[in-house]
Amino acid sequence: YSLNIFVGSLKQETREIFIRRYWYLSSIKEISRDYGISESKIKVTLLRTRELLRDFLRKEGIVI
Picture (cartoon, rainbow, N blue to C red):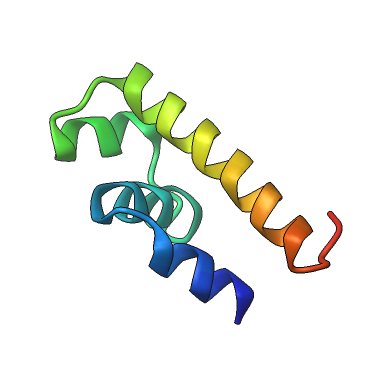
């Protein structure tokens, strides 16, 4: 439930990148190609999104 709330709060492009990488297990290269975004930007987007997720879960009382 908490994960759904978090993912729903993301901007559309960030949400799609996050889901492609961690749900559908697409490679960075595939995501970069499909969205026309550099691999570097994909990596940074995923890093920042993971940091946001960690903070969100911490606030929800879920320790990882």
